[in-house]
Length: 166
Image 1 (cartoon, rainbow, N blue to C red):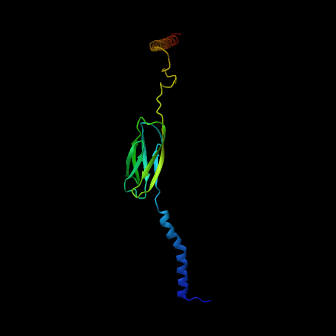
Image 2 (image 1 turned 120 degrees about the vertical axis):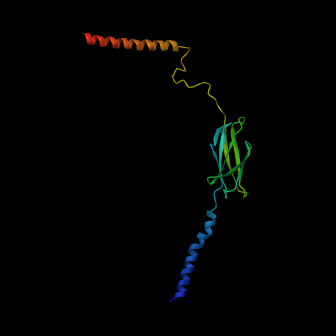
Image 3 (image 1 turned 90 degrees about the vertical axis):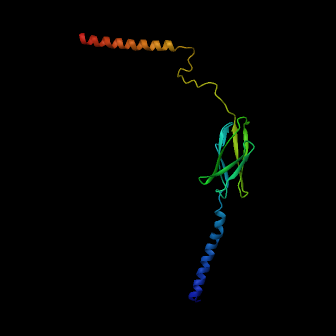
């Protein structure tokens, strides 16, 4: 079987077309941006702020984030993402709360915010730095320390004089 030059060229072009068509058809499906909503931190006590970072297909348009905790917040374009902050009310009960992202094109994403109880320590830790000593012993301790320093100086002067005369 003998192929002519135009026939061989046609076969070659047809072969290349078969190889590259799946790549061209599959490329638009892979080029779609990821749609997500991130919370930073995802666990916090009531009364603190949460950072919102989101992504839609078009991150040049603002989107909205909605929650039963803080209502609706607009996330605006910044550094290639959609960002904002929101404060969780101080009277929020501990639990898990759903946060929803609504993109301008109708795409949606959600995340869960974990609110924990705010706990204030009753007093500082007992580290032995004087905060745990009972009563007011500072004058006694200062006086004792000065007496020890004075005795050390007197002993030093006595030993120098003895060495000189002896």
